[in-house]
Length: 389
Image (tube, rainbow, N blue to C red; front, side, top):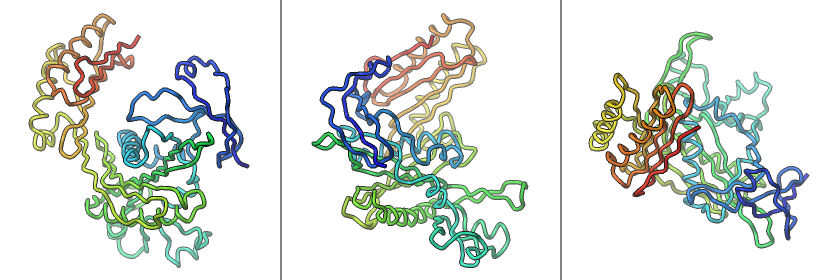
């Protein structure tokens, strides 16, 4: 059954207070998913870097799988938000609305994440040839456990789909873009025996990119064979996730785009991004000047409290340049006045220690939860500071 949508503008204030805005001059429109319901397009866009999301929010068909398939919470966050950054290269937030993926069903994603079966393995299973859709390499069972896993590691960890909708002249919504993220393993984990110790094989960077591009070509072909996406622009991005013990996120390494008439992947654009932990040896070796800024900031913060040593930062570099820095300060306070005073002190340090062009976010927390948030936009003369009640 088709879903019918009624489009209307609504202010965020009305939505937040729970007041239902009156429907005025609404046009009945048809959307290809599910049952009939009313849709609202928020009139307020909190930032030019964020898409407006149609309301009510419709969960993706494969919602929740990313939590179990990616290694760290940092990867989970970056995989989704980074995919939105890439989407803006072809789908402008000015006239596109975000929706979680409605094309790839959960069982489809699961089937694509499996290994490809050999003919012999297929005969032993209950699977048909049409269901043998695994995008990860065959394990033919030949050789030792180590040889098999190094020869055929699991490259593809997860598939994420985002949809981008536009409003037509007749006030109807249409799917105008699909963005697919392919999360690729940088380390393949395996066991030599059931319930035994975990072993790992580090996959070379060039192999990750090579196999990722092969998988992307197959994904593009399969999407073009589907009715919903056969004539829709598609972007496919490769995300190299970090190891399980990493304290910073992985990063996107490349993406390709197919216009509405394109049937195959033709070219790729490399993405030069990297997350770096402050303080760390890697930061001092690769970004000495920025590491010095941070260490001076950290030293001044730690002088406020004796025996305190808990300031860490996670920096995103784009094209070798520092593009954003998120700082976490976990500390124990013994009163709200103390938290307010410390926040004021840290705010001054943020403005004094870092270059004006760097966007900075500082999160101050205690065992009781978040205490304060400091946000300084690029080249802003004044930061935004919020003290949690």
